[in-house]
Image 1 (cartoon, rainbow, N blue to C red):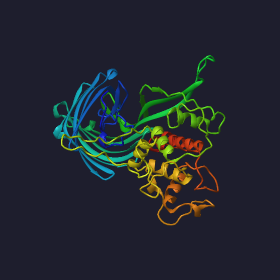
Image 2: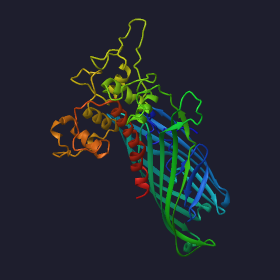
Image 3: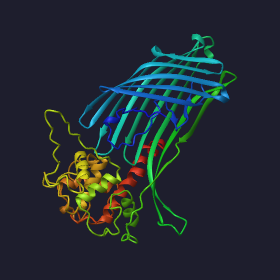
Length: 484
């Protein structure tokens, strides 16, 4: 299956660890590794078509060309559909935002069903889409709208069908989940020029959701005589759902009869899960600890020392070690700038972001990466202070930056509800508000903002963040829309 650049078709402009979804076009269809399905309403009844969809995309100078080729059928109805679409997309990056304008370049569609041929050519299909993407340090969020008018010629022009479409989409890409949900409203107007009494009107709504998640679980070994008790695994899978409802004419023996054909149905296609086993950590001093699972999982991801027997889980987490833990837990690739060499002059390597973090520091690469992304910033710049303890208020501020939700806090005066609120720095107040609203902070009358964060607490916070991405964020973009 060829990977689509689609909606925000700029993989080069996405966060480097983006967990992008394969979106199968804008016809309200879903697919897995082998099969594509969509619903058509051209006959006045919902018909499920399935087959193959091939997608090709190329990019040059902020212009993306996408080509979609559909070969579908419904064997029970002896129906066949052939469709070819070419779309042109223009991208306009501006700071952390990218606007996209997409228009139809070429189109051809033929449907053979009920002994009739439905045809659409370029001049009979108008389609356009506008999208906006906002890039945060680690996730990307986007939304868009599109409209279309498609005119089918049936039986050499004796009949016609006009399908007007209004659609919208919303989605996000992140390291532990990615979801896009599309809603398409159809207005259908069929005209029979020979027998006007057979003309009809109908409506349909198709909602499609594409969801990809990574999940972790512990696999315990059954044999007792084995060198390790078990280990963590990460499972990656994709779930695709169509939900459609319709209000169409009742047709019997090719004639319109009294009443309406109404209904709501759904179907889904899932991909085969991809399973990855993580390394087995050597830790022993975390067994029985309240954050045992989180500490072992973080060590399995190499966010904590993999080969150390002891890490003292109640000791504090340094800022530099937390930078490493973030990079490992969020699967952020380390990107280094290449030094250009020439025969005449040797270019100087880029200077470190922070004055007090040299290239010899054990966490240099991780600190540079979170610094470049704006996930962690300096303390008393240009210093990072990599070996000092991380405070609770710093940690909560960082996880909100990762999500990119700083602007969700209200403007003006508001209370956070803590008895020690006066000790919360002004620069952290918005982040603490959001973290509390998202449930990332445990319920308490006190925040203890300047207390040092232990390694156990740091591991727990990172996996609260992962669980939020896997469940709450995905729910808001998927079930929250489909169940409306």
